[in-house]
Structures are given as C-alpha cells and as structure tokens.
Image 1 (tube, rainbow, N blue to C red):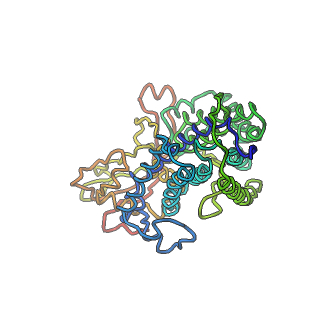
Image 2: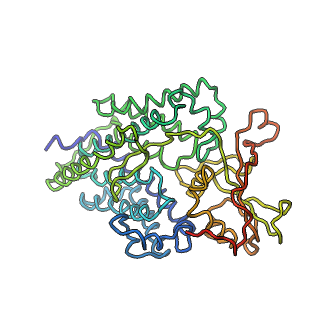
Image 3: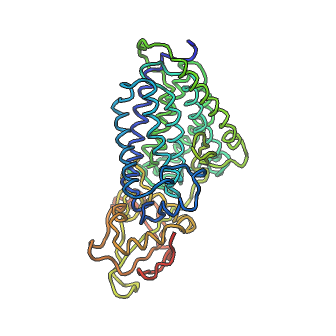
Length: 473
C-alpha cells in the first residue's frame, strides 16, 4: 500500500530514533546511579515492600517477579547498553522484526522501573518517555519507509503535550492569564539552572512577551502540526525554539528534550530518500492494529484535557501507553527550601557546631551558583522542593533520609554534593530548617557574590538522633 509509508521522512525518523535512544540512555543511567538510596533494599521507599502490597496487574514489572539490588542494577545497566547500541544504529543492521524487538527492550525495562519507582518516578516525563518509546517500536528501520500512521501518532502525542500544558496554565493560576507568571517562575521553579538568575532579572515587559509567546506556541501552533508541509515543519521548529529557551532557563530533567525529540519527527528534512522495498503485510497489520488501540485509549486523556477539572500528568493504564500531560498549572510566588544540618556535639543546642549538607542541584549555600544537570534527573533534589512546599510530600521518605544521614550511609551520601562529616564519623544529631530564598539583586550580587539571600522561617524537623527516628516507610 503506497499510502502506508512516507519515504520523505526517512531522515526525520533517523534523527528522532537516535535522539530518543540518547534520552533512554540518560534515563537508565539516572536509575543505575541513584536507585540504591531511593528504592533499593535499604532505600527510602524499598521496592520489596511496595510489590508486597501492590499486585502485578496494577504495576506490571519484572521486579514483581523478583527483586534484588543486583538484579535491578543489571536491568538498569542493560538498559544503558541497549540504548547505547540504538544510538550507534544497531537497529539498522537487523531485520525489521529484530529492530522492533530491540526497541521494545528499553521500553519494557524502563516500564519495569517506573512501575515500582513510587514517588521518585511520579513525574510526567517518565510516562512521556514510555509513551514515546512504545510508539517508536512501530517506526521500523531502513528496510521500510516510515509509516504515515506512526508519524501521525507522534504528532498526536506532541499535540497533547503542548496543548494540554497550555490549557492547564489558562485554567490554573491567574498569573498565566495576566501574563505575570514569569515575574516569579524563574526564582521559584523546582531546580534553577546557571542562567535562571539572569532570566529572572529580565525586564518585566519581556516576561509578559515570553508568557504571551508561550500561549501562542502551546494553544495555537499545535494545530498546525496536522497541516501540509512546510507549515508543519515551521510549527515544529517554533516548538523546538521554545523548548530550547526553557532548557536555558532551568533544569527540567528530560521534559524539554523529549518534547524537542517529538518535534523533530514532524520536521521534513531536505534529503532524497533511499530506495527501500515495500512494507511487508505483517508489518502493516501490526502497525494499523496497534495504532487503532492507541487511538481508542486516547479517549480518557482527551476527555481529561477538555475537562474544566483537567489534571496534570496522569496515566490511565498500567502500561503508560497513552497519558495526559501538563506542567506548572500553578506558580509559587515564594521559594522555600529545607536545609538539613548535622552536628557531632553531645547536645543539640542552638549554639552547637551545626554543619549543612549540600545538595547537587537544589539551592543551599547562597553563594553556590546553580549548575546545569538536565536532562539528567536529580530525583532527591526535586522531591526536596516538594517537601519545602508541604511536609506531606515528604511524609513517606524524609524520616528514612534522616536516618541514613545519621548512619553516614554511602549510597545516600552519593546523592549529595557534599557531606560535612567524615565517612567514619557520622553526626550525632540531624535537624532540618525551613528557609525563604530569594534571588539577590544586581547590587547585592556585586557586593556579596551570592546569588541567593535566605531568611529563616521555622523548624522543619527538630534535632534527631539515630534512636529517635520514628517515621519509616
């Protein structure tokens, strides 16, 4: 069937697949390097306890069948290896069915991780990577031209990502409608980047223009994805530019990058297509059948998207096949941070030698300038931002974090930038205090060299010693 394929998109498919494989690699690397302290056997939210109470049907995962830290590490590093092979183009050397199976491997492995990751894997970009990765299985390799139906599914996904995010903003915080959200967002976002301070200090009229341009890109431009070329390419290019602007302004894991990757699939690159054989019948049947299922599963995400009670980042099936997305429906006006300190003194008096633990990404020392980590995802740092918004977000894991710090647990300390205590001399007490943070002005930056100014608000956790840690998962 000649209508089934679009040969002119062969380079779009190649760029999309290689870029997606890079994001898979980042995701698996993040899992391999952080899981022990987060969800390992001695983690803050251990997988064995989770799978003991959650049935396989609700959270399909290899780790429902068997779990050990060694097995999880093997799966995560295997995911890294397969992803690297896909980046190198191994799928193009295999027969069509082999390439599809190879693309299915990282999807199945990452699904297994996400479905037992609990709070640490509750972010929208986890489902977005899984949905994108599942559709990518159907794209084929150099044996066939890209199927039109699959290219449509990728645009449909990109449409839902952008349009859903635009709707949640217009329905959520009034500052989006008043064009004033960026007066606060760069200062209060979960994890600022090295340029966020400068973005915050841009002129307010430019902030208004940024918000207005965002509304256009998310609420109007997505419809142009379904128009003929070159209009669809122009629409995708505009989305890519917008996402790159967001990449510069903060650390949002791979959310912006995977949106860029999706947009690349809609770009028609000016390159002559190679000669390929027609798609085999079995391939056409599989693609059309799976596409029909995905379209049917889109009903609930679409119903949520058009609802006045729209919710962000919700998955409607345990395989994360079709999901709903959205971010920053509400923007905080004030930034709070939980600062964790320890002391080796015998008594935890206020004048004791309290030393601050430094995190890799979240603000701490006012003089420490933020670094760029995205697309790498610092999961503990992100959850610490939520903890500062409300202790309820930290109820299931914060007590265990404190316990691990009192033990000088190696896996936990690897998640931090610096521990103030030697490996063989853990603190006697650990406490947590809540501070209000704000960006310094240009004058304050010149005078103090600090990008943040912080003010003590209240006690978050009183001084606690190992025998007193009460809250456990």
